[in-house]
Image (cartoon, rainbow, N blue to C red; front, side, top):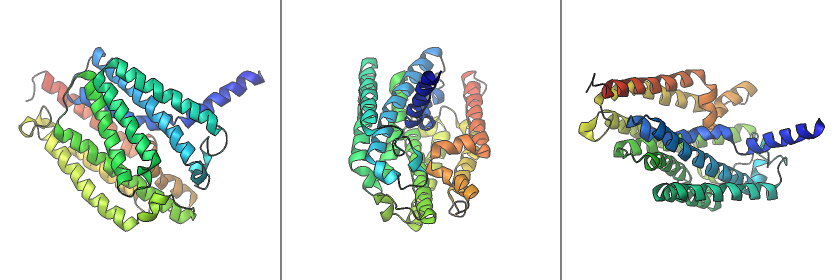
Length: 315
């Protein structure tokens, strides 16, 4: 019985290295069919296929990123526990798995459609540039994160043959920038209170600079979402009734800012785990109950509004 248990445990370690918790970011591919109210089994299946491709290609680059950062991750208070940094997975094995996942994802995307193939390939090229250079270039590093989210939204649109509003694309980019800035704030604060050696790019950031950037991007996110939700007169949503979702957006953004506030991330164990979640955005939605409830409420409200629009009960 020991041998099967050994393989099971090894499989769990490899799955952990693929960072399945971060796959929540790829749910952005469903934005196009959701907000065009193209809700059908066919649109769901093709969007789900795009989701799988993005999960596959993103996991390959999580492995590549961990390979490149193995030395710095071993000095990080949280990242030192990752499978590659802790030595549970060897660098050669991680490299082979990353290559297999990347080639498979790109090949399947081109097989599905040239548009989807181009987007997945562009995302892969962006991630290569990020890992080789751009993640060490101040400001450009968070710009790459934003572009990655835009490509996810475009992939969903390409898979389902839906045209996205320019305001929605801009809002997606602004929200991604917001999350990236909050991530850098949490990373910088954690290195300060743990006295760990910061990554090269963090040396160029300061909490004051990130707070000013946060102010600009937060305003831009809210404004672009408001312009999109104002309706078809502004080339936005299919109905101006989407304005009723604004309170959820305001609360979600402000709640996230609260969690990333430097006063929330302190040197005590419990608060470090609580406030440090914004360093790992995928965990915020899963572990912060108030934010999770508001996101679910936003989704439900969007569905109700779009259903009422489809039934002709509202304009």
